[in-house]
Length: 421
Image (tube, rainbow, N blue to C red; front, side, top):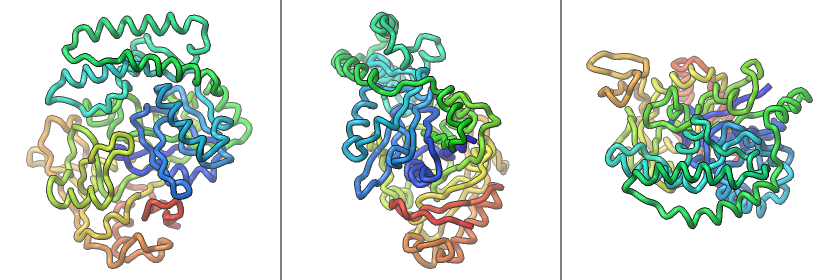
C-alpha cells in the first residue's frame, strides 16, 4: 500500500520533520507533486537542513527515495541540494531515483515567472519566482521538457524550441530578466542530472509494491493551495491533495492506504490570497516570533492567525485523512486564550462550509475559545503529561473534523513528537 502524508493548510505545516520521523516505518519515500518552492525543514544531528525537491527520507539510511513524475525539477537547484546532503549523508545518490516523466524547469521559465508576476502589479499572487507555474503550463500545453529528454541525442534541439517559444512570449512583457547567465548553470546541472538513477517511476514503484515494500507519498505545499480546490487563483500549479498521488506517481487509487494530514496548532500563509483568521495585530506578530514563521526557502515572513477548522475540515474531507498530526503545539504555550475558528459569517449568514470563492466575499470567523495551557506542552515527554485543557482541545478538534488526532509535535527535535493512543 501507499500511505500519504500531506499538509492541510497553506503549506509550511512541518511536513519534513514528520516524514523524517515516519520514514523509519517505510521502505520508500516518494514526492508526488510541486517544485523547488517547497521547503521541508529537518534537523539532523543538530544541523538544520532544508529540502526543496528531494524526498525527506534521505536521512534514513534504509530508505529509497523517488522524485515522481508529478514534480517539476530545476536541475540547478537539485544539484545544489544533493551536494549539501552528500556532506551529511554520503550514500544519498545510491538511494535517490528520478522519474523519466518528471518535467524540467528551464531558465526561461524563471524569466517568464518574474515577468508575469511583475505585470500583475497589485494583483500579484505571491509566486516564489522559481519558474514552477510556467513549467506546469508547458506540461499541460504539451510543450514541456522531461527528465527522460536529457538522455536523448536531440535534447539541445528540444531545449532551443521551448526557449524560442518563451522568448516570443517574453518580448511582450515590459519587465525583462537577464536569464542568459542561468543557462550555463543549467547545462552543467543537466550533465549532472544524466548521472543520476533515472527510472520509469510508475513501473519502478509497482515492482516494489509487488515485492511488499511500504511506500509513503510525501506532499509539498498545502491542501488550500491545490490548483482545483484551493483559494484560487492564489494557489500553486499542482494537485496537493491525496488525488495528486495517483497522477503524480502513477499508482491506482486502490493502492492508497492511510492518509496523514498535518496542521499547525495555528495558521500561516505566505504571499497573497484570502486568509479568514489572519491576525494583523500584536497577537499575529507574537505568533510569528514564537513560531519563527519565516519561509524555509524564501525567508519571507509568513502571515499568521488562529487555526481555521472550517478550512481544515474541508481539507480532511477532500483527502480522506485517517490520521491527523498537530504540529507546533508548543508555540501556543504562551497564548491565553487559544482560539479556533469553527464557522464563517458570510453576508451575515453563518456557515461551516468553505465558500466557492473566498476572494470575492467578506468572511467573519466565528471562534471557540480555550484557556491557555496550565503548563508548557514543550516540556511534556508523552501525551499523558499534557495538561487537561490541551486534551480537551484535541478532543474537540477530533470531534469537529471527524478524524483521529494521532500525533502532536511539541518541538523541533526528532524526538519531540507525542503519540496519542
